[in-house]
Amino acid sequence: MLSAKIQEVLNGQIEVEASSSQFYLAMASWAEANGLNGVANFLYAHSDEERQHMLKLVKFINERGGKAVVPQLAKPPEDFESIQTIFQSLYDHEVKVTAEINSVVDLCLQEKDYTTHNFMQWYVAEQIEEEALAADLLDKLKLIGGDNGGLYLFDRDLETMQTSE
Ligand code: OFO
Image (cartoon, rainbow, N blue to C red; front, side, top):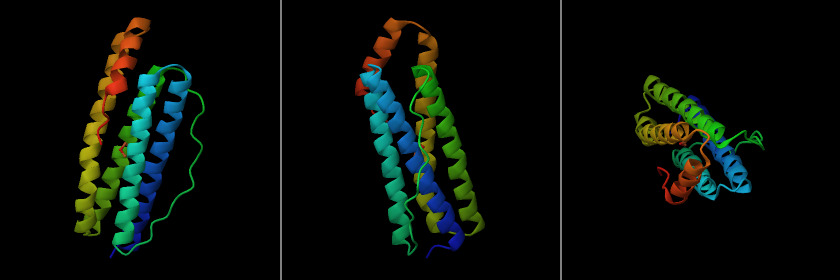
C-alpha cells in the first residue's frame, strides 16, 4: 500500500513524464515542418517513450492500491529557434527530470518504502542513458555549427537512431 506522500510524488512524476512527452512532441512537429525528418522521427519516438514512462507510473500506483491521476498539462512551445536550441532544451529538460526522480527516490528512503524505491531504480538507470544521449547529440551539433552539409548528415543519422527505451 502506498503512503499518501509517496502517492503524491508519484502522481507528480506522472505529470513530469507526460509533460516531457508533450514537449518532445512539439519539438518533433516543428522539426518535421522544417524539413528535418530524421530529427522529427527521433523526437516522435522519444515522445512516445515518455508516454510509456508515464503509463508505467499510472499502472504502478494503481497496482499498489493507490489512485493515479491523469494531469492537465501546460501547452508546450509552438516554435523553436533552431535545431541547436531544441537539443539544448532537451538536454536541460532531462537534467531537470533526473533531479525530480532523485527527489522521489530520496522520499522513498525517508518513508522506508523499499518497493517504490526498487521500482524507481528503472527510472534512475533510464535517466543515465537519456542524459548521455542528449549530451552526445548536443556535442555533435556543436561540432557541426552552421554547416548545412553537416546538418544534413546529422538529420540522416537520426532517421535510424534508436532512442534509449
Ligand atoms: Fe522519462 O525519461 Fe526522459 O524525461
